Image (cartoon, rainbow, N blue to C red; front, side, top):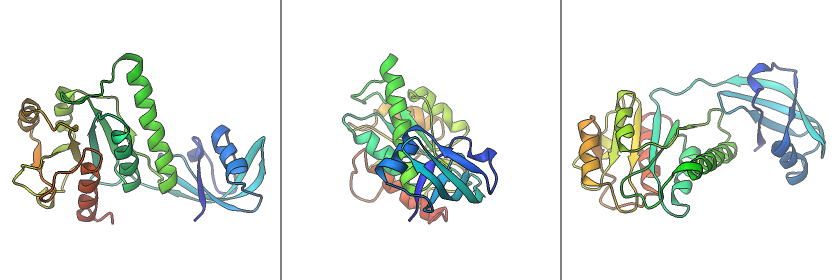
Length: 241
């Protein structure tokens, strides 16, 4: 499998153009991966453009790629998103990483009432940037032409407000409806609670906004795995896999 690198202005280029990989991308190609002239690589901008190319120059001071084939990838429809409650340790980041690899189209950090972690002030900006970096690296590994957008953190009121654009699907072990029974005729946003579960008042708020509750079998999954299981099941039903 060819290595994949990012180039933010890729959409501006055509076949036959030469693009220069910059900073971390150039370092990774020339120093870490030891790529050499003539080797095939993939280049993506994360916004729907994916190109095949051949390295023309690979030195410590820069890497240049000749583009041979460019593909424009349209966003999928319906979309599949993940609203992930903030969690302690690296659990939420692991969920974000794997969800990106699985193909979700949007990620929303959720400051749930029972979240131990609190995103406030400078910490919120740094944590959000960290999630976006995790998405970028996971998308490169998965060779994704389209990266999921990571939205700013929301509280429960703002999460409920997203029901205007998305069908919220709250993962609830006590739900009567199985994930296999969730309608897939509109954009779906999976809602995953924190380690201590979703507060009853928050469930009521989401219910009032039109959210559907769905369970994942007979077992209670961790916050780091529930969204991944649901995204996998729905990807099959959406015909993505």
